[in-house]
Each structure stands twice: as structure tokens, then as C-alpha cells.
Image (tube, rainbow, N blue to C red; front, side, top):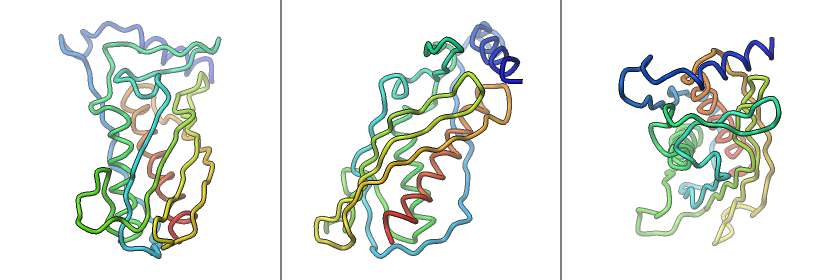
Length: 189
């Protein structure tokens, strides 16, 4: 099964852009709503920084081949740069999950946020088995001691549900939602 899935991804990666017309295809994750409700101990949260590895920060959607090489196709792109898309997904999901006012850096309100969240992604890549690997760490900073400051590692996987680029991007959206849930559970309570 994994060889067939890899073959399908590689076939997609080598298809000419004519399947999507003369324009380059751009993809955005389908919106996902969390069922989790976890009241935060704070009312304001800033997503201060999100960093990605170079291959993941690229506009091109990357896949890992069986031999370990990371490849991308310039005809299949993120609709928004992944760093910005992940930041916005965290803002939206944390707002919905916690009920707190959540915004990205630069902080738009007069008073400083009670909590600052920094996310450093180590891996954000579809493996040769058709699984999204999403790992790294996040730090919770509390300049005025609203919560205990700490750092947490995360390692999430999402199965790619289809054999197309939209399925790959949608798996990213689900993983990003799960990261927001983890931050709400372990970081803001």
C-alpha cells in the first residue's frame, strides 16, 4: 500500500500543469473546527513567532521520496506561505478553543498580551508512506507571570486521506488544529 501511495504522489508530482490549466495550482487547507473547549487562564495570547525548516517554509509543497530526498514541484504551491498559514490557523483555533483574544505578532492591542507563544517546527513533511510528520516544540512565555513559563515538544502525524495535493494540504490543516489543541491543553491552563 505504501509503495502504491508513494507512486501516486510521485505521479502527481510529475504531471504537467495542464491538468489544472495553464496556471500554477495553489492550495489552501480546508477549515477544520476543534471540538475541544478549554478555558485559558489568560484572556490575551500572542502567537509571537512561528519558524519552519527551509523546505517547509517554501511556497512549493514538499514530499519526501523513498530514498530520503525532499522534492517539490513548482506547479503545486501553497495559496499562502506556510508560516503565515500556520500562524493564522493557530490564531483561529486557539481563539475558538479557549475563548481568549488571540492575535499574531505584532500585537494589535494597547496592553501587552498576557502570554506569548513561540512555535519552532522541526519537521513538516509528507513521508514516503503517505503520512504527514509534524514535530517541533512550542514555548509559552508569560512576561507578567500569568501562567508558568515552559517549553513543550510535539510530534504529530496525520494520514493523507487521498492521493492528491488538496489531501496533503488538508492533512496539514488537521495537524495545525491538533497543535492548537495541545497548546490549549498543556500551555494555557
